[in-house]
Structures are given as structure tokens and as C-alpha cells.
Image 1 (tube, rainbow, N blue to C red):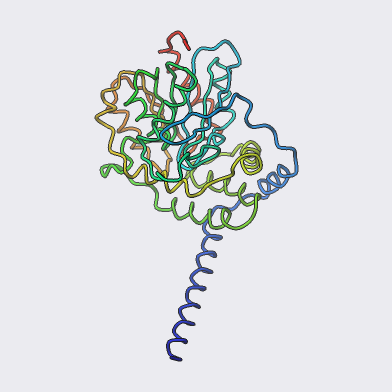
Image 2: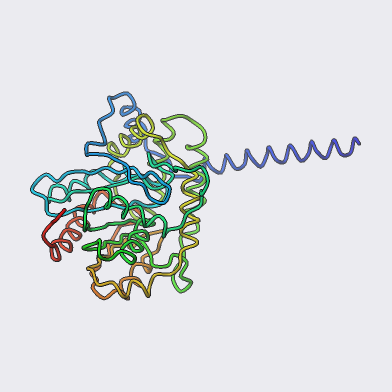
Length: 349
């Protein structure tokens, strides 16, 4: 009996030691924030929060989900509509404001929305927790239907690029063009390089360090750390104040961040089939954009996808990881606008 008690004590101590070691690793392995960033976050937390949602908002019903969207009007006469589809575990507010304004300034209405499990998008039924990328591809269609928009341009990043590919494959008649950024036609293509082995452990460690413990300030720090990890070997400054303000707005005025959504989105990607053959049959114009330093979906994925699409243009960006770098937003948005306006048709709604 005493022997068993001693064994349990040893096991408990080892477990505690393992947890402490894990927490120590989490603290040590993630990128550190600069003193300047720490001060900026502290300052933003004590300032009035600017309004981050200025367009008309609503909900579209899609496969048992109530999908929140925002409709941002153009600054000039309307040329068309653009739907933005964000990456995994991110909501509508993850889009850089400067990126959106490039399109509204050029005369395009911009529609952004919260993915399933993020932001203000809600599941109507408590069952049916699992869903596929094909299910998620119905969400932008449901939004267009609810807004009575016949055709739109669609821009997706990362998982959002995969969703945008599926949406255009299944409903090509609803889209004037597709832009797929830092994405893939088959994320598990064995002939292509795999993600950097450092990214996932660092992302998880960052969640342990900032997402599980600490309050709103730590949650804001997590957004900076994740962005820095996703940049990989790319260099450059982060537009710190807009990022901090969006994070604080999300925490105080919306529904915060839901880490479980990332796992659900990952499962959806894991179950998706390759799309090379279907993409090769698209007739609409396609633009493929990829960063050469992408540590999550290596650059070669974008190149292989572009090679199979008939009506395609591409942009390979130096010093870009798995994010929309602030220094390259002008370059990226100008390329997208050029592609869109080369093939634009008269806007009807």
C-alpha cells in the first residue's frame, strides 16, 4: 500500500514538473515583444476605442450557421463588389484597414465576414459541430444571396483562399474574378515542401503563454506574437496601433477570440480533396499571390496552383511570409485592382 502511495506521489511530481517545463518552454520559445510595442499596447488600452465597424452589418443563414457580415461602401461611384475571405481562426477584423481602403477608394464595395466559430457568427443548432471546407464555401454565397448581389470578385487568404477556390468552382457564375493569396490547391500535396516545423510549436506556445493566462493585455500581445511567427524569415515593421486597436475592439465590443475554431478549421482543411483538376477548368480570371518566405504554406504551392489554371496571372512577393505585410499592401492591392479592372463588367445589383 505504501509503495503505491509513493508511486502516486512520484507520478504527481513528474506531472507537475512536466507542466512547469511546458510553461517554461512556452515562455522561452515565442518571439519577444519590443519595449516600444509593450508601451503602445499599454497606451491603446487606456485610450478610447475607435469604431472598427462602420459599414452596414447583417447576418446570412448558411447551413445552420448565422454568418455575420459587414458591407463597407465605396468612397466613389460603385464599380463592383469584393468579398474578402480570411484565413483559419481569424475573423473579419483581421483584415488590415489599409488593405480594405485601397478597394473602397477605388470604387468597390467591400464585404467581409466572420468565419464559423469566430467573431459574431453563431451556430444555430448545438449539434452539427463538424463542417467541411465545402460547407464553408457556401457562406460567401449565402451572403451574396442575402444582399441580392448577382456577381462579385472574391479574395481569399490562406484557408480563405481554399474556400474562395471552392466557391468559384461550385458557383463560377457568381464571381467575376478570384484572387488566391498565400494558399494552396492541396495543402497536403506530398510533392511540395511542408510547413516549417517551428511554426506550430511556436503558435501553440504563444497561446499557452498569452492566450490561456492573463487578461485582455495578454490577448492583445498574442495577436502581435502570432503575426511575427507567421512572418517567418521575412522582415519589416508591423502596423502596431491598428492591430492593437482591432484586438481590443474584439475583446471589449465583440465576442473575443475562440481558439477552438482553429482546430475545427484545421479539420475542415484536412478533409478537403485536391482541387487542381477543378481549378484547371475555371474560365474566370484568377490571380495567385504568394510570399517567397511563407513558413506555413510554402511558396511552391502557389506556383504549382498557378501552373494549372488557364486564365491566370501571378505575383510572387519578396520579403513576405504568411501574412499581408504592411510594407507590401500597396503592391498587392495595386496588382489585384489591375487584374479586377482588366476584366470588370458593368456593375448590376
